[in-house]
Amino acid sequence: MQQHWPSRLWIVRHGESAGNVAAEAANGASLARIDIAERDVDVPLSACGERQADAVGSWFAGLPADERPEIALVSPYLRARQTCDRIRSAGGLAHGAPAPVVDERLREKELGILDRLTRTGVEQLHPEQAEMRRRLGKFYHRPPCGESWCDVILRLRSALDTVSLHHSDKRILIVAHQVVVLCLRYLIEGMTEAEILAIDAAGDVANCSVTDYAFQASEGATGKLALVRYNFVAPVTEAGAPVTSEPDANVAAR
Image (tube, rainbow, N blue to C red):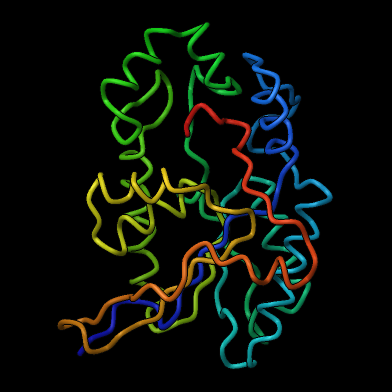
């Protein structure tokens, strides 16, 4: 059998960001716009997000030395890079692991003209887009200058091909965003639109939660990745850090 998958794959959502906090406040006040100055790519972790990242880094560091991630791939967005850097600083990567690799294909879903708008804002300022999203569903709706879930999935197919080509049989850590976690589940597990949207509707992916896959050699000619756990928050709770699952600053995507 020729193995094309990593031996282990962890997917971690970034820690709570300043954008998460601002989005939560805007939604709570039924505001149209989210009050944050930076570009979405430049939004940093909050103090709580730093604690969460340190906690999950310590959890990885507590694994046996030969079970920690050997390769880290990370979204270019600051909050994801800061999370990955704190995991590394806590000793969460294998000894001798190279610096994390930034991969633009792991970036957040792009919202185009709906960027920084709450659901209320989309309804008020772009009612035609709100209606189109209701008609098409979030999986296929692409806002002007933005992306649909299918667009994210397309670039993630390419990212998984790169993992297969260059990192098969390695232990891989991906640090990215809520929609990336969900779309990777869709791809790895061969889900339907209805199946992944049901998981999404059941609850948000928590900040610094761990989604974990292990390689199973017995499944097919090339084996498969089998889900070990999803949205695992014990590393955060055991360290005494708050568990959060606020929407990102581009909350209209949800």
